[in-house]
Image (cartoon, rainbow, N blue to C red):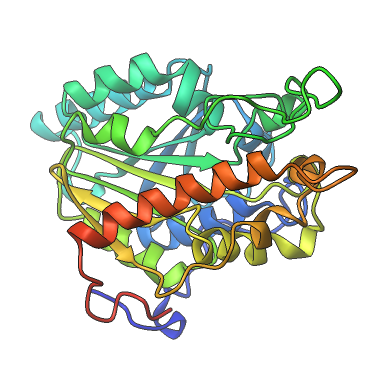
Length: 317
């Protein structure tokens, strides 16, 4: 059922306190709500990354099951679990009411790069699983290095700025949403820790579909983005208000945006306070790079507004 207010978010906590994640981790903030929507009858298959530190034997913050895999093969692990559950249910050795949801949990390095091949195969096989990507736009757990999710002009450990390269990353971010959408899976969506009502409703909508279901969460990373740990939700919301991170979903390939900003804030409001973009403003303001980012955002939303009227009530959060 669709919820209309944060008052309607489930009370049960599947992800408990006491994790070793960084303070203010935007991925952890969103994951807490994801698991509330999914419930405790789930098994998480985690590809190596920041979230691998969440469940370290013998301690775990989860009220559900957990399986760790290497970076490239989490969907293959999910396939094995899903097949085993289906066989046990078919043979009568497991009651259908004891079935669990299979959830792959990754970072953007796995989702956009290292694990993309096995993920594509799982989508092609129509594996019934949830895929949650915590996108902090770099390889966060190994020093914040460039990944396929790193946006244009971001500074990372491997796209350092200086005289030879004043701008940082020269490449635009991959469009993982469209890569998945080309496979025509039953459901895929972008989510944000700043919009928990939108997040919960998307998971509840996805539950009606059997097959691959993707959720990409923009995950502010205080150490990597060089921002204060208390400001993660602020930057997550600014990403939406400036149009840099669109909230959208696609059902069997049919796209719609669940939030269309009435008037976009300038992208500078999102970029200026992040250390990874500080070089765009100091010591010399890089007008060309800032203009390029703004033009990319404006072009995207111009196309959206030409195709989609604002959905009724979708802009209320």
